[in-house]
Length: 334
Image (cartoon, rainbow, N blue to C red):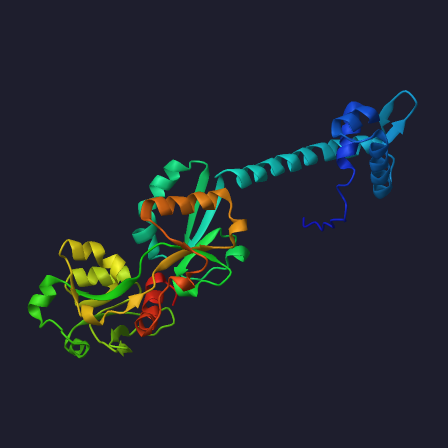
């Protein structure tokens, strides 16, 4: 059955005084326990009785007893008040040491490349923290949705946030497998892509993302074609490794395949540059120890840099602008 609750102003006023008197059956002992005067205890109890509309104590010159209303109130109020005290202690612990639930809102693509290498060591270093990573393409409202921090592209961070750099600036790279390149002429100009099988990304709005480049001082978009369309960059990367065609992907997710020779980089002279990815959180005075521990762990593991906002470190220029939409695709913000 649905119940309607009305919380009255000052509903808890006098409850602690009542409980102390009820335990001791003595106003002076209750006053000593709470560090106030007996008259203050008496006034608090009288105010509580007036608010409830019933006498809670039977007072004589020699003793203090509970009325029937007092007995009933005591039986319900004592466990509830003790639970409130316990809740306060739990909250105080979270505010004083690294403990509790730490929720991060992140784009799906950053989990394997940025967070997975840190998760195990962080959980081992801080066993009292429960780390929850919510991988979603939506840009979260941290306060409204109960997140301690988020991750996004540097230039999208609001001015009232503090940002911690997670990656350096990085290019969008065109990659192809040695097997594919043995069968085709290596492209040397952006225009040469018209003769190649280009693997493409379909955005969540239904459109197919163009490839983006920086040509001198100009941002260039190339409309390419090919045999395969995917909805995420890891799938495009896998198809390129298998020789299905060329792909344009953020360099961090292609790093391993480039290092071991499964892929080669093409058209490097025209690569646009992204400002990098940042962890962000509200003003410093709102940072709890659990989030501070995570930030310090990132710094220790990856040499992260902190700035008042990302604006001072994010970079600028046409190359950056050209790359922004493609990075949004990678991060799942499309």
